[in-house]
Image (cartoon, rainbow, N blue to C red; front, top):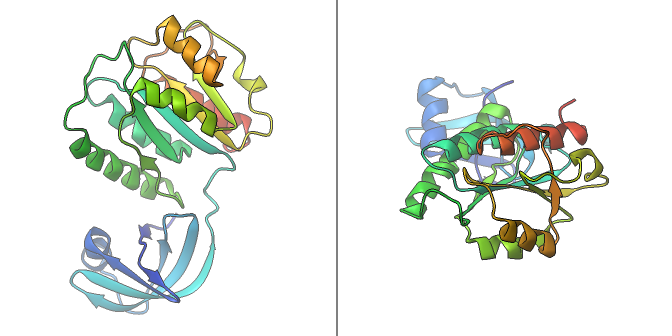
Length: 239
């Protein structure tokens, strides 16, 4: 798969790359005038474009053709992840993006070990991780990493999805029975401490369906990736 370059600077049949992408294409890849590269707008459209001008921090391209990205899954998957300790969230973001998630949203619940600290600064790094993972995976969309939610805010978000699934350690319905005609799916997984029974019930009352992930206990960084993999498999997006 050819290297892709993301930009939102597309006007008519002209696209421009700036910053790191421009530097990578011009200096690292030693691009030449007339060379054809793959450009993506980050919203699901790929462009075949020819380099027409190379400057130190800007590469200008002429768009030759455009087409919907073939790498985006048919289901819009959002991962709501209980905020884990150390660098586990970075790993979840990277792997979630590779699997096709369009949004990763951390949240704080009662049994979270960590507390909010410099979240705006962290979010900038998380978004960069998502962008780099999207490039590596050939995505046509740059997934969004949201700022962390409170548990109350998480409950309010449940009704936004036609299918919202809570991966609960006490078990629930088989995942395979919950995805019929699903287009927008939310997966909720807990932090190291999981959920209190009261939290699980509040999510269920808001419309989330409890599901199990088998008889084994999965670590907090494993559960969202295992569940995302299962959703993509069951909806035909890993074939």
